[in-house]
Amino acid sequence: MAFERVGVVGLGTMGAGIAEVFARAGLRVLGVEADAEALARGRSLLEGSTARALDKGRLTEEERAAILDRVTLTTSREDLREADLVIEAIPEHLDLKLALFADLDRICKPETVLATNTSSLSVTAIAAATGRPGRVVGLHFFNPAPVMRLAEVVRTVLSEPAVVDEVAGLAGRLGKTAVTVGDRAGFVVNRLLLPCLNHAAVLLELGVATRDDIDAVMRLGAGLPMGPFTLLDLIGLDTAYEIMEVLYDETRDRRHAPSPLLRELVTAGRLGRKSGGGFYSSEPPRAPDGGSRPGVTAFEVAGPGADDLAERLGAAGFRRSGDDPDVVLRLADRPVVEHAVRLRDPAKLVGVRLHGDRAAELAVTALTSPAAVAAASDLMKVLGLAAVPCKDRAGFVADALLLPYLNDAVRMYDAGYASIADIDTAMRLGCGYPAGPFATMEAMGLARVRDGLRALYAEYREPAFAPAPLLDQLVVAGASTFPRS
Image 1 (cartoon, one colour):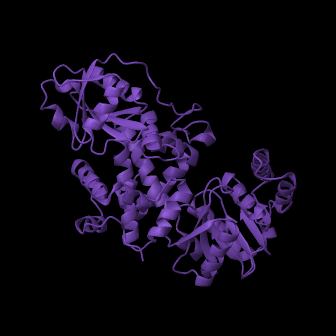
Image 2 (tube, helix red, strand yellow):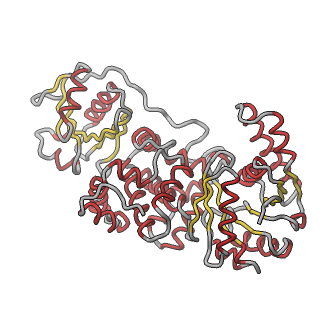
Image 3 (spheres, helix red, strand yellow):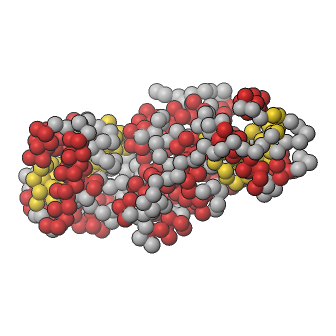
């Protein structure tokens, strides 16, 4: 069918963005809110978003006026009777969505397609609340909807294949890349992303590293567009909490249980940017400073890549000495404390993991002195690296967050839920990641990923950290890439 008249129910940040996306593509849009006050907020969001695009030169005055002219706002759901497609973006509560879809089923003409923008709830349950389950799909946009290029199209066992194809085609007409998936909690993006963000909150609560340092190493070391706590504040801590609850209800995987710290912040009303503060208040994340010239006269360094690091430090004017060093740097290949106990002065040992020319994780053992940590941190800063101290735990910070996410992607593919191409596309376009998980693993080396997961499993005894069988098999077979059909 040709979609020309679209209804959007719920005009909060997400719904107003979706309305703008449809209007930009030339469709007539009817935006529906519960009352006049909510409708005014929706109008303000739409006008503000298009005004910012105008200021940035992304729209002309004429284009902005045409977009706004295509959107009609109302407080009456009854006005949706002639819509070809209706999509809801109301709060993530299943009972509210079930009641809405039952009402839409009554109001809309029989051929109308009903869509939900839910990020985690069961599309099947929503479809079953109507008399047209074959014409109900998930159409999940990402925030900000006018900017993000991905749309997840969610089919259920009840969906008519032609309807799913038509909605995916519509997503393309909107300028989005459509990834079509089955109805599992979190779909692709949130099912892979949210457990990683939740685990960051666990590491923070355990004191493995500070909030700012975790954010810094994932931005600078892992190359992500923003750190996990900055991203959680953007998503909304309440939204993240609700998604984790849905994931846990489906999987009963303890990694999917919302972290106690996340629950505490939500209960306290600290929901992120929308409430004025979450993990951060109004201040931006702290950028690691460059430091001043340290009072280090001599250092020692050992482990894989030691000579390269020594050469860099030597070029910066520091002396390598095995007799009287101020600090011993260990490029780690196993728990750092195992190396520390073999030294005459274990308090001087600091583990180091370099992330290119941008960041260095510094692993601090139970024996490491504060003076050694300060010296190692200063040396890294002299080299232009952001120094990120953390406890001596398997994976430090970056691998402890990154590798389980990669492992989850392998399990998702191996279960037949989505293709490698779709998973990589979803994470690149839905999260703004520089590469999808499979491309990332192939760049890192499959053996390194497998071995890092084994180390995490040995330390944490978390079943989900055990390497996915497919990953293990590929490494044993000597493969360097994943099979693609």
